[in-house]
Image (cartoon, rainbow, N blue to C red; front, side, top):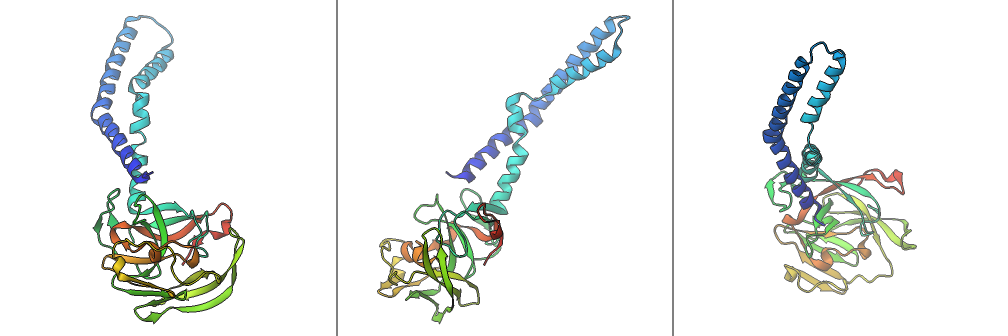
Length: 299
């Protein structure tokens, strides 16, 4: 389901109703109210010596309110326009919420984390078509990025940026090297994945450039990439062997990987992320119903 498209359609429909109400229907209701009040006042004047002027005023106010009230279909469309428009603008250009559905980014992000994604960090983009209209910045190595899955743009994926345009990324024997510079690794205590009820080797990885984050490796999984697609764009830029894979990142593309290295389908398997598929930079966990202590920023 393309929620952005649904939201855009709602903005258009409620916006048309709101404009029509301001330009046409509101004037019609005012004219109708004026005519009804004039007739009411005329009948009141004709009733000589009647008592209960307070009742007349109450009836007159109710009559005016009734004539000025929006019909139900207009009330439920035009009145929601400002709210829907604000949500659409906020979600399209400022920040968008997502929920983590899989364990590919463990230990950084857990299944069930609700995260916020900065929509302007990498430039302002038109909603729906995702075309960049204002250059504000580019992804940096180590960023956690949300993007449209290249094989199915209706799906949103989240991974870590490892290779920038023009980089040569080598992932061999479960270690990253970028442009000939190896990442640094610091061993941590083994990590218990409660979803799989299994332990993984846990490291702090520092990519060339100085960005650090946690990663997991499964000791019983081989280093080679099994099941990589054979036909993704720029497939000729990648060389696979028993130790892993080496890829030269094309211009306008990015090489991304999950932090749960042996449990993530990423650029090693399906290729590079085009710039036009970028959604934004993930920066905050705003809720996890199972663990409120996870709320906050992450690396």
